[in-house]
Length: 227
Image (tube, rainbow, N blue to C red; front, side):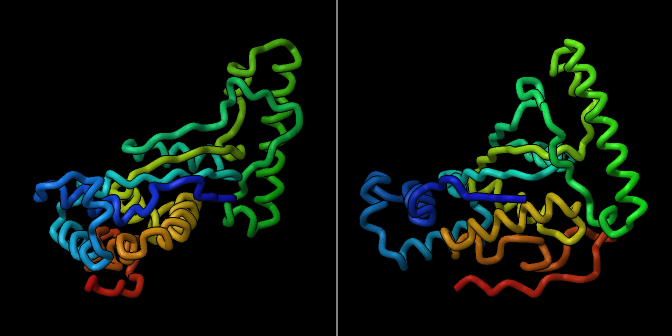
């Protein structure tokens, strides 16, 4: 898996604070953006985050490029609907050589399972090529391609949705591949807005686990409290 942060809102914490402060200020957001001190920015961020008035977080956005993940994972990812996605198309991209297939760790740990997995993916791709070579459109031949096939995707989320995504997908109960993605995205985003993302991740970082009876029983260390 290769995850890169392509773009993000410049000075995201200042942008969020200016948008939030505008609701109560007699001047415009552009003026607030320039005049607010770092201390004032942090005070506003603390107020909106701890009070749950987080709509202003939507004014900062992040765009990630993700390569080397499975179609099984991206089918989970796009359930996060408050985001924008562009994914490599199996309709318009025709594969001449066998692509990479993502092997789950549980499969990779067992030689017999690796052999069975490899045989199945090779057979699926061979059948795909047979159809394409026979003149079947790639958009129809792709029906044979398995969920394990490697894909590429671009993701754009605002900060409010990112925090929601991290809460669900950094959890130890999340499926392993999307959890790896969430942890990688958080590692890239956190340095750009350390105060906003200081307690991002699974709900147990901030308080009780929200998984109820489904809890893993192995909570993360608590995040530091906002000052």
